[in-house]
Length: 305
Image 1: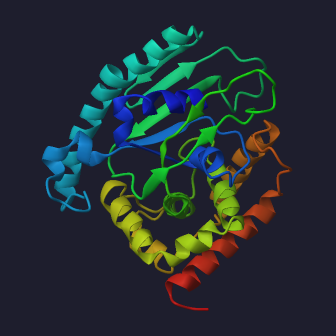
Image 2: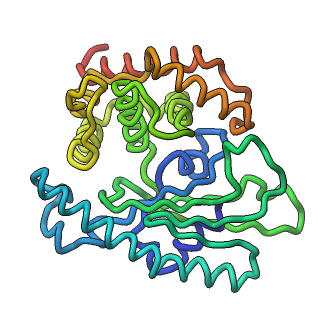
């Protein structure tokens, strides 16, 4: 994974990228201890679509129709950029270093497939995915050093090191918390491997980063504005999900009913496949922890003590 992260940042294209998501929390911030190989990268929307953004300081569309036009154009440009620019960078690096791996490009995702040394249940596939987005600036972000987990453990073996710009963990908290909020209101999984978000939020809280995120009201509302425009969703009852309300006193992080059962099953699969490096807390304990995080976030947003 570190090699896959270091390679684009060693090229000119790395100047417009921000590393984010759970893998950044693991590799750059060291606040979570779970297997995480997907590389989530944001390509600054101001770089890929300067003609659309113009002088818009927040780089957000002004209307829903403008959002649809921006999103459609950004996806088209990003897909072409991944295939025409990123793929050759990765392919040339693999060839130069004599590494045995295959590349697949699927729209905005680039996969580096490798031969596994062991097999599990299939929850994790033998592939590193670079997933690119380009509907935000990726800020706030700052450079951090990323090394392999095994670095320094084997004498005489040199591991790759990456120096990416990394989205600040406080923003990652709000990104994950609002995604969890949507799940709680929709009461259904929209794909597998979703339980990791609850695990990550709990670890962010233990590291004190959730409290820091609660206090940053400007950041919380910036995430809400961004998601309101680019990630509009509806609850199970078909009412629009209000992200602004979520970050200002109405956050939900513990699902109920069918949603809770689907999440519990996904969490069990994650634990069974050994993705957590430490002993996994019981599902009920994790949900209680997340409910407490939501309660504290809501109190902080309302100015309560």
